[in-house]
Amino acid sequence: QEAASRPRVILFCSPCMGHLIPMLEFARRLVADHGLVATVLFASATPSPSEEYLAVAAAAPEGVDLVALPADEATLALPSSALVRDRIAHAVACSLPRVLQIARSLAPPLAALVADASSTAALGVAAELGLPLYVFFPTPWTLLSLLLHLPELEAAVPGEYRDAAEPIRLPGCVPIAASDLPSPMLAGRSSAAYARFRHAANAFRKVGGFLVNTFQDIEPAVLGRVDGLRLPVHAVGPLVLTRPATVARDHGCLRWLDQQPRGSVVYLSFGSGGTLTWQQTAELALGLEMSRHRFVWVVKRPSEDPLGCGTFFGNQEGADAALDFLPEGFLERTTSMGLVIESWAPQTAIMSHPSIGCFVTHCGWNSVLEGILNNVPLVAWPLYAEQRINAAMLEQQVGVATRVKLSEGGLVCKEEVARVIKCVMETSDGEILRKRICEMKDRAVHAFSVEGSSTQAIAQIAKIWKSCSCAN
Ligand code: UDP
Image (cartoon, rainbow, N blue to C red; front, side, top):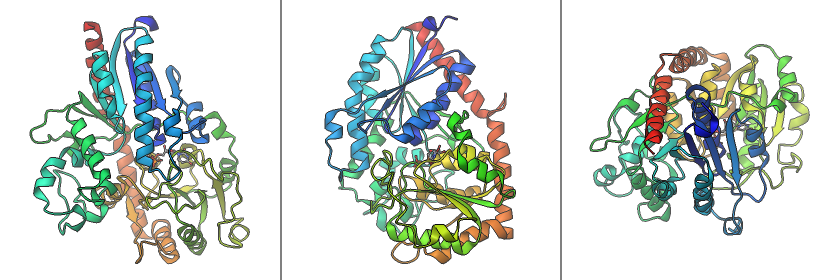
């Protein structure tokens, strides 16, 4: 069929790299496997594209149009102290008129509007276009279940969530301890953060369906129903970017990895936005040294950001600054043992290298899926968003991670850093994690086999969209 007459899906993404990456892969599958046309619109929050965005855009799949919508003046004028979630909300809101304009300028038929989980404000645009809004949920079902159960939880949990003595129990999900709840829930029910969280949860009840980047074998509860709700939920994962950027192959760290023994290197990364404080960064460096294992560490300039996501929109400020925050002599002492990469690394290429034996991760869901797909056992070091829930699930339910323990004051001390790394790299507990992650990888691969659950789920949704667009 000619591209002009093929049904088109418009996918709108908030300025979150961790949302854009799996969304692009979802778009690729719609185009390559189901003959749809896909336009991905990315709401920028920075004046010029960040290094991170450019790296992802360079690896965008063939056949998928990716357009960055520049941030407006109001978003750019936000003070540097503005919270990440406010910046995201601004960038999304200011992009909506352009999403509508672009959608109207594209050749029909339009099949659906898909917005990532931070962009439910696009409901109005979908209504104007006469299209259903589907939410692309880049994180696990457990979080979506929490959001969809919020009204019941409000009634069931007296007082503030942070004071709850009992964990929150959702059908089929890992029990969620109060301290692991997302920060808006911990902020208190009368906080603005919670109001926004609640607003998103309400909006979720009005959408046409969910596309969740998970798979049945890792979260069997995704098949369950939320009482009183009839929202179609499609488990379409694990979606990770399959086409590594060309630049990745030339990256010096891959040549270094080629020279290391199989399974001998610890890879450490806290995602696109994760930052540690100055003290925590130094403690991590010393612990790494104490572990005596080889490493590749993607290090960000320390930040005192209370939520631990100081580089969410790119590491633009201070990206060229020296690594002066590392403990004195650290780089010299570890020169034969490890590599420190500033700001952004070709993670999927690194993770698939046979020399990688352990992944210290902030538990961003893309990173977790990449760890699973590469058989690399995890050290869970959650920082922000739903990452503490992911860490609990990976350790207690899925059995593929060991979680760092915080000392008083919330610090992960150097002894603990060395302990968790040694646990994964040297002990029988680490072997158990490795075995379990290999099993989970097989199931993840199976989800995308011809008869696999995620292949079927995407085929089903593509069929629905094609039939809707024919009716347009
Ligand atoms: N990533 C990367 N290089 C880096 C850091 C991150 O390629 O130096 C990619 C990583 O492979 C993953 C995504 O960025 O696909 C981060 O998503 P995740 O959900 O793990 O965390 P987030 O950044 O959303 O917190």
